[in-house]
Length: 185
Image (cartoon, rainbow, N blue to C red):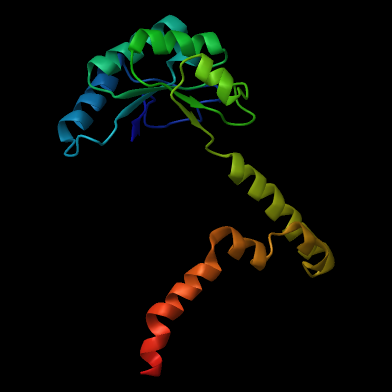
């Protein structure tokens, strides 16, 4: 899970006007999660939006405090340079996450670039969603214009393509092996 350091009326991390809770309150949030953790494999990640609000040094200080409070990982939001990721990695000595979201403050760094900065995890939270939204909009605009989806069917994944990708036919064969014999008996 990740715990954020914004106030209750949270804003997107790539938008202006974010407000942060104090470092102490953020650390209290982390400590509460650490104290409540029942599974040692459950990862607690501290997300900070301090870079855009308070600058790099303050954001790193906040990240360090979160690690001292028990955070297993750090998620610095709206990072604009690979060197900033390196500084978070070096300062915290825990895995650091890169949030690679289109149309935000963070450039679309490659995985090799992120690795070179010591980033442990890359998150692509909206990439497929944005593509699906654009495709869905095109389909529904076509339906609205033409009264049918016939003209955009070629842009869709066919049932056969989906089943091939999922291995659905193998699933059905397994169902037949398990249950079809019982029907005949």
